[in-house]
Image (spheres, rainbow, N blue to C red):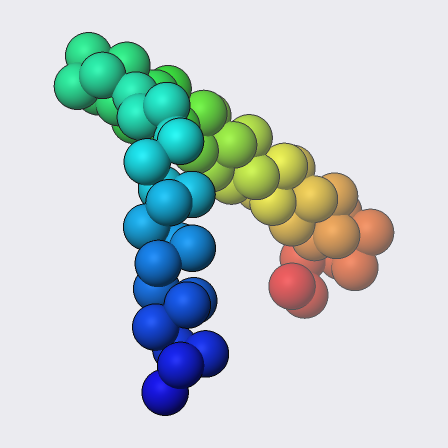
Length: 63
């Protein structure tokens, strides 16, 4: 029980040292994450379509 109490106290102490982002920073970074995620998704989709077309050409339309 003593170890748990010490752990909680140390955790609280460390969390007080953290520099938390502002609301504006959080919103901006969230938008960036969604935009990059969407861009990667589009890139993977396009790459998949191109590879599927190449495989269809090689396989004679069997894919």
